[in-house]
Length: 226
Image (cartoon, rainbow, N blue to C red; front, side, top):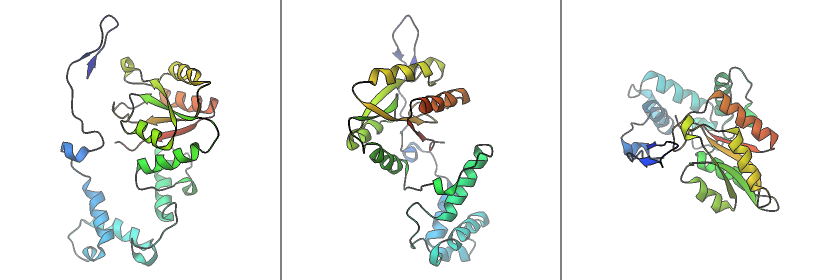
């Protein structure tokens, strides 16, 4: 937490351990329904009794019905179960007000870090120094991940005084400053923010989309923190 004015330097009032990326160690309880469904899928015998709630049993049974052999041990397509991808696509369409999301554009990975690694490896398959625009502050693992795959970073400052928003002028400044030393291929956004926790406004989101379009950048958005 910081208090910032135009006349005095920032003063740290209190440091909070928010256990970034390790919420359970901070005392946050896991989502019970998800674990119950996973339990039912991995140990189908438990579905025959009333150990699990009816909604969790039904969800697990439905998932198993759409897997070959009715088992999580069966192979799926490399991009994930078609049934699950259809479900995800419908959920995204509902979230986005009816904008169509196609299951063929859904790729399921083990976690966000694995998904980001796949995309970064694709982006660095070009001549010269590839780069990704990243917010400042950014997730503490992001720069190490970029270093691991050999991609440079171009930082843009989030606007603390306006709720850690993204400013189009700052994006323009950052990409212009990178010219000549690297070639930005993508822009990374975490929304809700990590580590700030801030949620970008609709205006801010639209600014980022327009910026990515104008600069021909891939848009990498981590929306996994709720």
